[in-house]
Length: 404
Ligand SMILES: *Cc1c(COP(=O)(O)O)cnc(C)c1O
Image 1: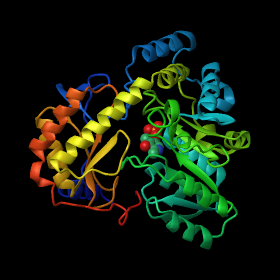
Image 2: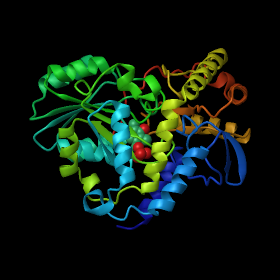
Image 3: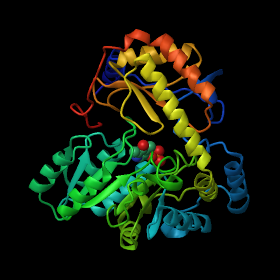
């Protein structure tokens, strides 16, 4: 087969306004960034608490490197499991109120490892249609019977749970949905899973740091313990501002993953200095409630401003505040219009979101000021104004597309 065919597919993607391009960031993460040589006010990072460039986190990384060097050197099961990794696991177990925690190098790998460590062909997996790509990929890879239920629709889940057989049944959901910002109805999902003798796994990549007491995430927000949410996943690259991920749960779960999670076993441990930095950011995240309070004030301010502009927001109480546009080309045009005014907001298109639900994914951070949010609102008013009113897409639930 000729590579010309690849080029033809790339050209078609470009015509469909789905082509993706990278920007080169010349600065640290923060409210203002330098991109391809120009300064922008940015509303697209997942650094929700402003910790990615915090001096104490930077210093912890430097001190960690002084002490432990740079590379992890080996996998955790050979001799790459260091004191810093171990200390971070213990601190995260206490933070999440779980017996134990296991670190992974990324969230993608944590999800792949946890699901494939627990399930095989004899089992069944049930996923929200809007789950993160890493969860969907993990489910497909496991070979388990694969069912997707309607977004946040417990009845739709119950129906599928009742009619599907399997040695093990695993219900999987994002805690905070990464592209919509809404919360999963965890208490009802937990009851549904238990009623069928199933387990609930929650990927709270966007909830840790932002919701729950002291930023303890969605399980804490709903006051659900290890029995109700036996498999809890968090990532360190978002509100923690560092890199890596973890699975929290019972000792039996963690030992099972140490034995069977291939993305844990067959990969080099994260640099120990990154574990040191993550421990420093955990301390800040727990101690500094003002970050969440300020963030919540910004969220309220942004939502009020958008309502006044007649923009189509989603039901999100979190720092993820998407503005639904509809078609990919329209979302791209609006993103370009904002960029021309010095504001950086990502347009999210299929297949990351369902066809017809392209959106601007605005994310807010505790490092933003009220004046910066007002600046964004003013630019949105200028660029979108009347365009969006009427382009209502009321539901993203109907057309979820699997990646790949
Ligand atoms: C970002 C994200 C991941 C992946 O985490 P990384 O550490 O970036 O690989 C997994 N799940 C969800 C819901 C996410 O938003």
